[in-house]
Amino acid sequence: MPSLPLTTKELFNVLTFLLWYLTADVISLQNQDTGAFSGDHIYAEYDTRFTYCAFQILALVGALDRTNVPLAVEYIHRCRNFDGGFGLAPRSESHAGQIFTCLGALAIVDQLNIEENKSWLDSCGWWLCERQLPLGGLNGRPEKLQDVCYSWWVLSSLKMIGKLSWIKAADAAKFIISAQVTPLVRTYRRTM
Image 1 (tube, rainbow, N blue to C red):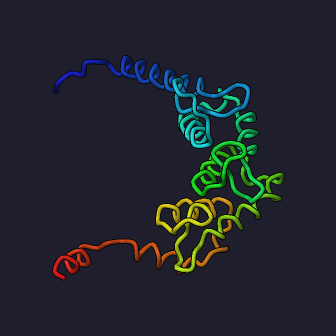
Image 2: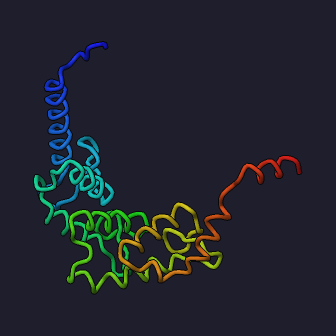
Image 3: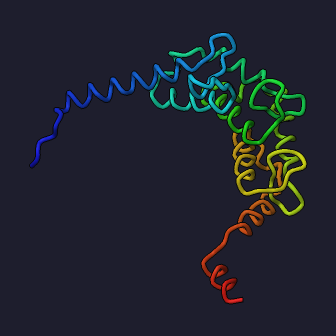
C-alpha cells in the first residue's frame, strides 16, 4: 500500500490550520460598526448575501461565537422594509432572494421564530405571497415576470416562516413543471 505524504496527525494539523484560517478570514469581513459582512477586502461591498454566507460558514465550522452575531442581526433588521420584505442593504428595494438570505441568516442563529419577530413575519409572508402571478409562478419583485428561480426563493422563504400554505401550491407546482423541458419535448420540437 502506498504511503501518504503526510501522517494522520500532520494531515489533521494542516486541516486545523486551514479551518482556522478560513474562519479568521470570514470573521475579518464583518464591519465592526454596522455588523454587516463584506464579500471581500478589496471592494468591501456589504449586503445581506454575505451576512448569510458568513453565518452559514461559521455555523458549519462551529465558530459563530467568534463573531458579533447580535450586531449582524441588528444589521439584518435594518434591511427590513415597510412593505414586509428585505433589501440587500438598509433602504434598498425588497427582493425575494434577499428575503431568503435574511430569513436564512436569522434562522441559522435562532433569531427567526422568536416572539419579537411575530409582528413583522406576517407582513413578510404577505409580501412573499403577492409574488404569485396568475399562471402560478412567482416573481422576485413587483412588476417582474414569474420565474422558476424566484419560485424557489419565495417558496423556501415561506417554508422558513411557516406560511407555505398561504399560496396556491398546486398552481406553483404546475408552473414549475411547465418550465421543464423533457427529452421527449425537445425531440418533438426538433421534428416540427
